[in-house]
Image 1 (cartoon, helix red, strand yellow):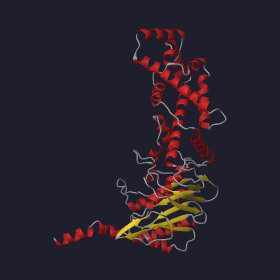
Image 2: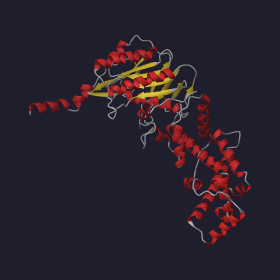
Image 3: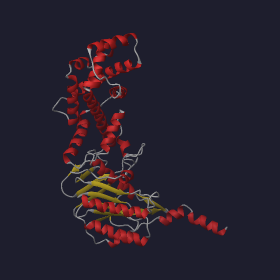
Image 4: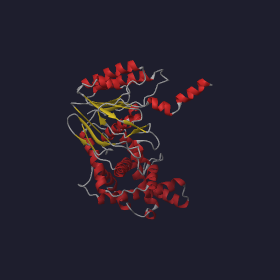
Length: 440
């Protein structure tokens, strides 16, 4: 299995990792530590195509959801442990003479470096005590690889008698000479093991953040199946306060969804919701839907919020062409892609947009691999493709009430000719303003 293909445009379209609160990452980022946040971001950058790895991630999250009511890290402690273990002034060797000399020296004239060392040692022991209690709560044979790895790292450190002796001991009981010895063990002899344990704690923090978020948002785990299937029931956009769920189903017999609908009817939001669910599924995470069945895909490419590239002199239309070319290139390398185009070829004249959309959608439908979701502002393309049995036609309706458009954002089967462009222009008073200017 290769890597799951996703490019920067897709990440931006779906707001997967945007900075700030308005991103999918932010929905899941309930981590406690800075290291946990970095570990969660690392997970977000690594969608998977291997069923075993996906199942392992999902099993870890399920185990935490079912067995851990609460996981409380002391953020201050772990932040200081991180700072202490990664300080550049690591000891290179240890001797009894040097240990006694430093202990006496720091007794009479302690300095900031010594206080950092003493506190770092104490915080490490508190952390080891926390992990020991956690491992005792979830004994071997009843946990996930994540907890098994934590237990193994703990055992690697506490096999040293001095470290084992002081685990959980009050800070004042770690005498000055012992501080010197332990500092050498933690930052020299067992430095890699100590960092490994710290990183595993961060990964646990990241996974538990996913657990918290999944419970809060009532997410569900997708079902991965063999064969060609992408079926989402009740899928919704996780960044909306009051999202409208929708259902979409594609398979080998119909692997293209062609969506029509007026501006503001919800096409873009629905397509983003599908893309987000597919991406989260390939992270091994729960997804915002009532039910999801999917084959394991090789990648995801969306073109939703495409802009001009002024620096390179590319027009919007040329950028659209480059996106279509990218899809064609990736199809040659991948068996299963999900491709999403929102209003294909909006950046050119109507004639070219019609001809280009018709040929591209027709070409997608003739492929024997992948899934395609395409919306258009040119409904005539849908009519021209009406007899194509490989295409599922869907639309988002608009109805007028008291002279105003009303949307329910529910995807339906069929094609709509709804247009509200002129209404928007009239409602904004554009024609009236122009008329007034003419009379003046």
